[in-house]
Image (cartoon, rainbow, N blue to C red):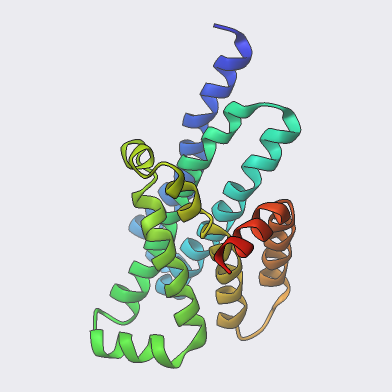
Length: 202
């Protein structure tokens, strides 16, 4: 087997390691030295949300990179990156539901309705849920062309996630605006795909 193919195939476990290391490190710190954090819940919320956003943008960058390098095998990295993105997003939601609001469902409903950034964030996660489920190869084959149309919804998530970040911070907009700019840049690479999809929906 050519060395280039072996190298490209080795990138998949590297992606899993890259995505898992921050989670392992933060878990170790929280377990053995929780007093190192002034507010562990707030820190974990920010940690999980920001990692989800980073991985979301990385998943969108895979296709342009693969085309630039003329290495179609690189595109296969989108699935593990996307699944890790959903895992961090689910952790982000789970921390808020369990540690912040302690599963008080009436309060949770009120918060989502009353606070725009929570509504946008929940909408982004809800869109990602079917995308994660249908990333399974068997479901991908079963859906056929519908699978690609369904996964175009990730472009909406790429806008909602930075917007959720922007609206959630009380000060210091520089970082979330950088994420929004990165998302817009990555979406610009898909201008033809987006316009074609929008016209088809009209």
